[in-house]
Image (cartoon, rainbow, N blue to C red; front, side, top):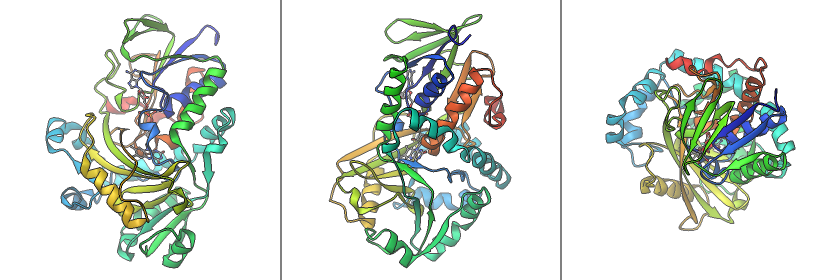
Length: 414
Ligand SMILES: Cc1cc2nc3c(=O)[nH]c(=O)nc-3n(C[C@H](O)[C@H](O)[C@H](O)COP(=O)(O)OP(=O)(O)OC[C@H]3O[C@@H](n4cnc5c(N)ncnc54)[C@H](O)[C@@H]3O)c2cc1C
């Protein structure tokens, strides 16, 4: 059956590459399709953290209280295009509805359970792709400038702990001892001691991709423009006029997953939380682990080629123009935190794929038994890619998935 089942994965980001490798592990022959180089999209520019403690969503019961300040302050990691929000009110309204306390608690529980399986999905891929040299396990630190910031974050931190993600609380001296490169004093902090990070996120995708090709995987460098369902197969129409008939399709095109014509459930409320990074080459010696300045909404991560400051959330749609305000914000904050040169060497914008309930969509589409969805991993796609790939491969293989995927079903939006 496996030899006769042809599978295409649309999207060679970290999620698509992870699905492709897991499918190969199960013995399937896979075609990966992307218009770009593997991992060149959002998966290239993230903060690199394997944030298995990242179960607390952006949705929050106190967002209504904090929103006016977050949106108007020049020192805020959140920005919103009012014209875009007015044109697309539905996502915003659904997002707000998911900020109610009981909804947030539910999201935390569901994400917590999936995140607990992070390494069950990731480790086999790292071994298969010989990519362990791209990982570093030295913990991850959250820092708070004032005692009040720390107290305000306490409910979120306790929620992480309740899900089993342990941390050590730090005071000013602990922080300075652990990260002497920090310029300003941070009063309080947390250390997730067992956390790890990726030293070059795009190189990780490329390593997966090389392994995929070694295993006989086929790559088509094209954009999929349409998906057409047949009686027992799916036809993919490509940008160059060609097409591909396959038995199963995994849609892993990140934030762009519903922009393909003929996609079942194009009405899914998938939108994007834009995020930015600035990178300073050869400055990685300033930190030994990712440091998240919590109220500033970004991580400073030491990577192979420099320090990357990555984060912020901008609700403004899919245009490619960088918002200079966000670049300036990250640069200013980064320089406040670390002894960095005047200007970064790299400025980057990425598109987090986000559903308004901050849960990914993983599983069969509701209208086709041949099309599977694997997208919507918002702030934690690098972390969840491996376990998502494992679940997708189990589904395609006809197995009972090793994790309860009911909460991730696209049905929840019907
Ligand atoms: C600033 C920032 C920091 C982040 N930090 C972290 C972090 O520290 N840890 C973490 O876990 N996550 C982090 N994330 C989130 C993470 O980067 C994303 O969730 C993840 O990269 C999404 O991966 P993906 O494969 O779904 O999407 P993508 O990486 O966007 O890949 C989708 C691919 O699909 C292709 N594609 C799209 N449409 C088509 C089509 N029609 N035909 C063919 N191909 C198509 C694209 O070219 C692209 O290569 C961060 C995100 C941002 C923006």
